[in-house]
Image 1 (cartoon, rainbow, N blue to C red):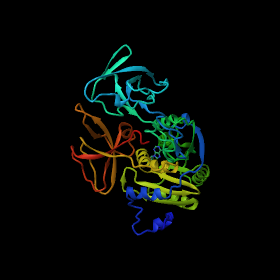
Image 2: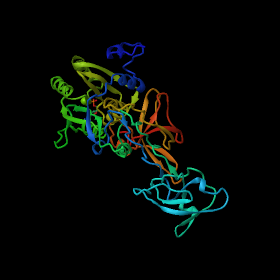
Image 3: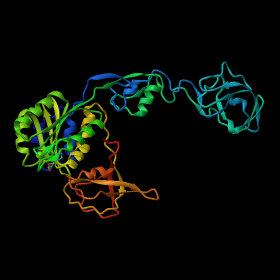
Image 4: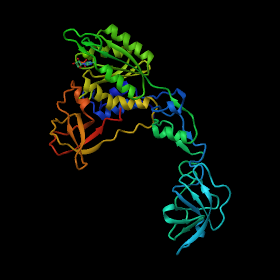
Length: 424
Ligand code: AMP
Ligand code: MG
């Protein structure tokens, strides 16, 4: 088998390669083939590990639970002491509470009062719920109809000694933090954070805090990119606004690539602007310029500048966010060491709006998922869908994904949605 990764140049020479109409899936696929994850690791305390990516398998050093224990409040008994028809009265020999086990072995015709989590006394094999017994002084009377081993949690049934509790490449959520703690491990090995440098390009842009002159606008992309990178746990290097000037851009690209694993820019890759940026980037590295068959977010550049990965996002604020969600997110997670990076779930719901859509491109319309009085979910589109209308992203809680061949959508049609929250 030939596993050799082709060069970007080889990809761009393939027969079916059309940079002017690049399908979304194909662009994702090309990008994914060039991603080489970070390998440096560091040790962190579990409290500081939330959101980090595990760099080693975590092997359980013990059984969880450590002992056979009770899943109910009740009485630990020997099953052979119970009757299949009629009642039996046993002597209550003692107690086994969580953290305070019964000492010694239970004899026949004895029962031990046991609470949830209490260690099952030696000799006992069955738990009878307290609701199913009658007690008088130190005697307990139990009827028939019980099963041997009922209400027992077995030692090691959750995790056995030596078992892989968590696999390398897993992002750590509160559940994993809890699992690591449950086996008594305080420090774990995680991949170092991915370092991402980013800047905005455009003569019209000013940063917040400055006063825009006539024809100038506030830079918003850098702030949304900062937010999205922070959500993904990256270390960020904000390089500000860079004018559309070849010398300034060259210096910025070089500095960014020298200091980060990934360089992200916005603006400057659309027709008209792309030419000199293209020339510049092909001098500094190897970069492909695509018109993706999607809306919004048509122009996208991807490649390498030195050893850094490069994403040249479009300038329009919605396009920036959509291309980040649809291409950059998965790539950053993979580069950061997450393995595997499963596709974000999509699911079908009825759309209550009429949607305008021309066949030919995949659309990522911004939608609002809501639940009606009967607990049924449906989606409607946020108002205007222009790629400059950032409010559409703010109002939305999902993307409505309309496939390439889809035309207009009439109200009531089932559509694919992808929830935004939690994905970035
Ligand atoms: P461009 O791709 O550079 O031609 O930009 C496309 C559109 O997005 C133009 O209207 C720009 O003014 C706008 N734009 C570019 N960069 C930014 C930015 N950082 N913040 C807000 N709008 C931007
Ligand atoms: Mg521009």
